[in-house]
Length: 282
Image (cartoon, rainbow, N blue to C red):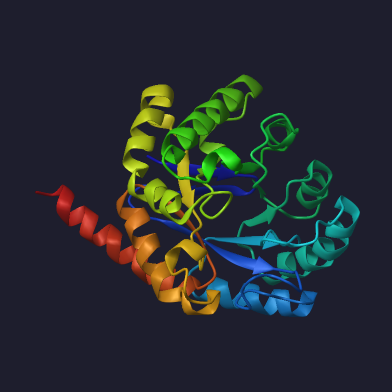
């Protein structure tokens, strides 16, 4: 059995894929889909994604697009707090908060969030201990950096980070079913490196199974509308390529998808799992 455990329950990932719908309360996200400028819009979009089959809603108040202005923790919470309150009232789905500030994550957990989604790649920034203390789910993403940009060694670097994250979680007492690992598609990597990470997910997962046994954390892929999918097209024209990339990721072992288009992702992921079940009966 594969479980993702969080503050308000758990999601069974045995034979299925969880879809996390992106809900951005930022004015400058790279894609208009999922952009919610005020709490009312956030609540309405949350209800829409829930109806389309989302398992998790991932709320972010800090843009991570190239060239975005970095907000302070106080500025981020000023955006996030009202939206989180509105979304928490609008749906009972587990809520993930996309932040790399421990103080923002702590406030979010106090106000209805269930999961921390930390894209910083930091293992000593207090997020693991916070998730452990609060019984929260924790998504940790591979950090970017100059050593990732040629793409030739990206799967190996990803496996090294995932291994370190598992060991740090075990040391802190965080149950491995509460941990999800994200290879960080589009963060400090080349287009070919991003493709290589998805293509080599089975090799990465096999290595983690040697380390963690049957309790290996689930892998989340968030390739939604990223540049590597179609570098010559604007983000809004990459939705079809997103569905294709996520379908491949599921076939390769990903069990959570972070997406802008929930309905398309839900339909595609369910179909891929049907194919995989037929393959496994042979």
